Length: 227
Length: 322
Image 1 (spheres, chains in turn cyan, green):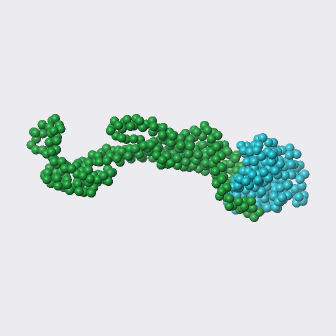
Image 2 (cartoon, each protein chain N blue to C red; image 1 turned 90 degrees about the horizontal axis):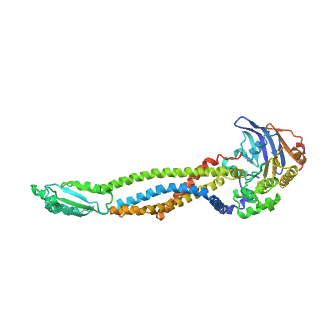
Image 3 (tube, each protein chain N blue to C red; image 1 turned 90 degrees about the vertical axis):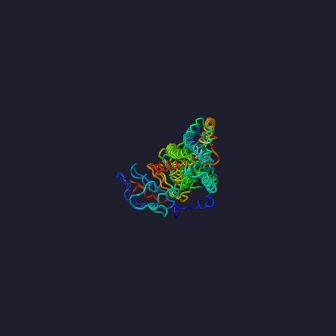
């Protein structure tokens, strides 16, 4: 599903964020991406979302080589990648329902299907009763679940999450992580950048550890693939 | 997943409805943009007012120009060419000449004025006519007054006719009393050019004002734009509400401008008529007819769209998720 081949990312100021990174994730696999801040986690996710382009090497998502996607095709590509952000990135001037409906509206889905899909996604994250509220009226954990509903409402084959539990207490964090693992069980490839090592250890999923832009051998790597 | 940029399962099922959904989306964007502008009535009104006022001035000037042009077009028949014949031409020859000219296609009618009759008329009309008796001979020439064919309206054509008549050897000189028309024409030409200059400057200012308004709107919705781009919104999708915003401002501005023009015409027409009457003229400031109203609305809308398009083009590309 995702394949990195000797990927390097060097910024214009000379900072080398990723150096010769190679790994792959198969369909339906769930993995954690860890490392200190500045280790290149965010850069790696940005490369997959085409917010940045690699300086060297190839990245494949599905069968597609990302370096071959022209700029005007990027929006269409992003519709097939669900992303969950640390700070939720919800729009506070509209309801929970409208926030989740946004990706469907963008892809031009008709009104009736939008309602059906949005309610299914909200049901999945357990927020069906709060669709009319605005994000300000719900808790932080609920906001993050709205973010997850928005990321999966399009039924993307790939789900990325950047520190999805960053601001949440351990119980809420575990709930969120369980939600992700449920998605991976139905065939969605999930890659979660996180530094919540205790939680990661508890989850027994594959861990890709980055250090100064390179992939390190990880103590958790052995437990990969059993989920 | 074979190719993420192509539509997969869920999307392909809706292909037949794609066009319908597209228009539905347009109308919902238009609606929500319109109501969000109504929700900020004061700032929206001010933006429209700036556009409206900027449209009023050139429109009024154009209306004045059209009114003036209608004067110089309707000066019917007042153009007469006075042909002065050489002294040695006899009254008989002159009469024949006048008759011949009257038959020409370019000439509506011709009138021969015998110099003796002219002298008598002169004597009868003026007090100091006695002085004429001291002259040895009649100082007046024979004259033929020619009225051009009604089809010949423009000053240039009448001038041409005058010059062609002058080639006639019997004719010494020709007088054309249309100087005022010529002057009016050159004034309207100048006015026309001035209007173009003023109108383009004001159009530019409308575009700048709108550009600034749209820029502020873009700034205030930066977070939304980033999120939309992150979940796969195309540039067109992001641009749409702002283009509608500019278009609505343009429409509102031109409607307001139309109202202002009606008010100004109402206020100006009475003094203009009084002035015109004192010159024995039926000059009237023409109002906005259906076509010019439509043109004004179209102009406002296209300026609004264009202004926002420029602003969007310039500022939206700066906003990329980071």
